[in-house]
Amino acid sequence: VVLVRKKAGIEVGGLYAMKVLRKSHLVKRRQIERTKTERRVLSMVSHVFIMKLHFAFQSSEKLYLVLDYCPGGELFFHLSRYRRFPERVARFYAAELTTAIGHLHSKGIIYRDLKPENVLLDADGHVKLGDFGLAKDNICHPTQGATSMCGTPEYMAPEVLQQKGHGFSVDWWGLGMLTFEMFTGLPPWYTTDKTKLFKRLKTAQLVIPNFISSESGVFVKGLLERDPAKRLGADGVEKVQEHSFFGSVVWKSLLERRLTPPIRPCEG
Image (cartoon, rainbow, N blue to C red; front, side, top):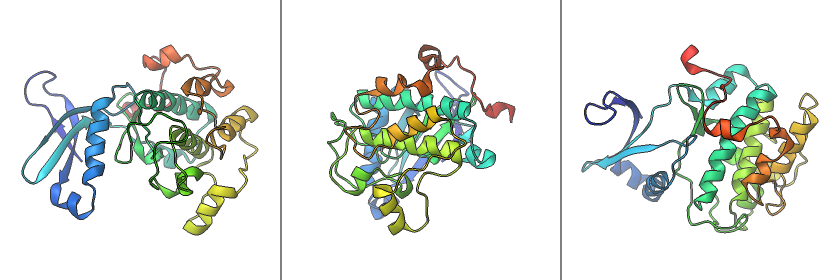
């Protein structure tokens, strides 16, 4: 990814992030479909907290995707620096991501790879959800529509691991994993041993640390319900937004970017 500046036309001088993909590498790594999906999905969505695809073009050897420039970098970087976030900070990012996920679902899209590395911060500190290589469109059900075992192992939902089919609910599991990680510094059930990890994801009890408020604990438990049909969010984004964890959030102001972000990259 390289930083580029627009030289002519509307928004001349604007800064963008340009993703350069060598076609031969895509063929070798069998990533052609993934790249096509990313471009198609990005062209379908328009949301204040989702990375925007401004331009796409190609040469004989390379593909170019011109996207929003996010000088705040990855949420992963900030979480690593702070180790864990206070609940009000985690709530802010979880709320912005909730609206982004809701928008994707309204377009029949599941994201399937929610993790701190894929959440970027713009110059003002608002989130931009990026990297849509594992997304899938034409989904219309909370628990069915996709069958591939894909995603980042530490964040995979049980129904993905069991290859029973998955739908919109998979992203609410992802939000639960990310929210827990923002609270504690690590996703639940974390281990570097993949065999142990997959077993824990499917069967281990969720332990909520005592420094997390009961309200936040109930929210995370609702999202990390192993039955995707009973999971918080299975009945739609509104159920997530109505949870008492988000009781202090004014959703209209949030969508208008009028809430002050807890981390302001431009202020260092």
